[in-house]
Structures are given as C-alpha cells and as structure tokens.
Image 1 (spheres, rainbow, N blue to C red):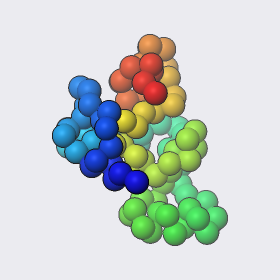
Image 2: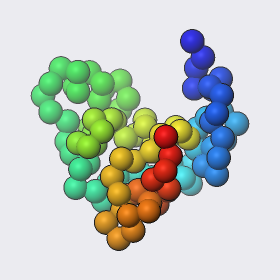
Image 3: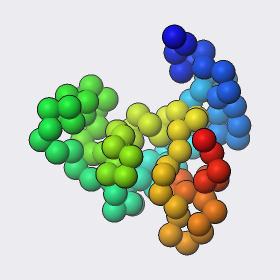
Image 4: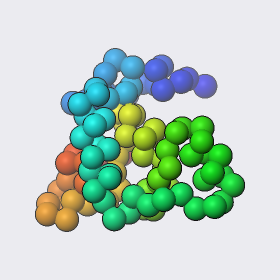
Length: 99
C-alpha cells in the first residue's frame, strides 16, 4: 500500500511533490478550522484520547471527525463544510468540487 508520499494524484494548486501542502496553506487551513464552530474539544472516547495524543491535537472537527492538525496537511484533503459567505468554496477557501 503506498504512503501519502507515494500516492498518485496528489497534484493541484495546494500540493507539493509529497502530497502535503505548503506551510502557508496549512496555516490558512488551520486558522479556518480554529474559527469554525465545528472545531470542538475531544470527547472522553478512548479513540479520541489516544488519537489526540498520537497526533498532538486536543480538538477535532465535529463534521468529519478528523484531527485537523493532521488532516489539514494533506493536499487531497478537503473541508466538508461550505463557506457561510460563498457556497462555491469550503471553509478553507478551496473549491467544493474536490473528491
């Protein structure tokens, strides 16, 4: 099974050659998450506690269930929530037509 660094199709305006986004894109995405009402503290569920410790994140997205400190790094990742001011883009300001 290929790693994220070997996964084909990790190209586009936010992608690097390794399938991860540039630091500037990562910071912009996380800032959007931190401002979102769906970015919530982890529950006491054992998977959340362990996962949070592994990735170093104390919050998660209530919409997708992801640890955003990790998810926001991947070029192929996307925010499932529409921007409240522009339905054509997600809260990261990226096209909602991504798969």
